[in-house]
Image 1 (spheres, rainbow, N blue to C red):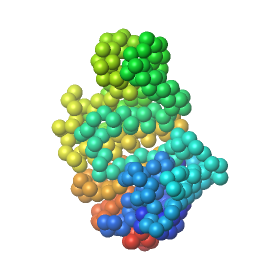
Image 2: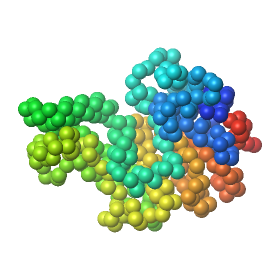
Image 3: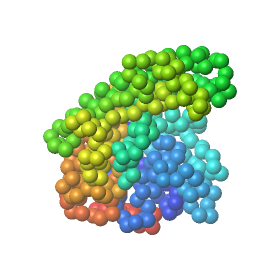
Image 4: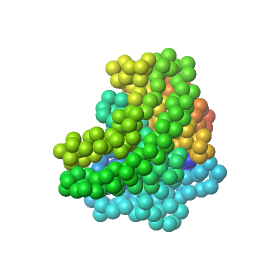
Length: 358
């Protein structure tokens, strides 16, 4: 997927912006508060209908304004043009794809696949499994069309089982059997995906000394060697005391290891950022191999935590993957500019106003 044109109206400090993008790398340069991240946020909103910066729609809309609108003209791998529009007003979303209103956000996410790297992306490595599980689910969702509905069914049964646990009902065994059926299918899809993901990651890290020993592993969310039904029965007293289901795919995790040990205490913050970026690029490789569709890469604050050599190395990898990429920077460093190709674009932003850099 490529974004050819983007229109932004009344998003934060961007009153009105009309931009035409390169199909390769687009660099957005400007000072703090200029509007760089708001452009990244606009694309994210088009793909997810929510912000990665705030959960409150009012904070997104310009002061004294009632709504914001974002529109993109995109192009799929087969050169089909797709029009995506989003309006936020009064806490409500109006979303249209090719003029037709949609209500399922999954349809939006499938239409415009994105990967986001921010200065907070190190949480994927340093914090609990929620971040890693979301990343895993995102990856499987984009290559297995049945996954969303399967996960939805599983989550509905989890909610019913949790209600039974709190009420001490006798129908828990019914929910256990249903969970076991869905869990086996989910685990099969997740396990298969992680194998493909790990293979793609190895291709990207070949020749990078501090990353080549890293492995992506899968933890299924319950004790190995047991069916989920047996694991649920084993934990029944704990679950009844707590009132929720403590084992299952909703407790799965990724295990990122280097020579068998967790990477958390072995990598600097800059190395963690490099690792997270390659994990996302590897997901983009898997999607392209299965769907022939490229992922749009959003990279907020590209320069932070990375020296010039590392920036250059990472930029070369991104260029090699040929995904359309949007990256924000503060300083126009010559080392970075000289690495840009003839088809790449750079924009300067100041007070929410964008202009191409020639």
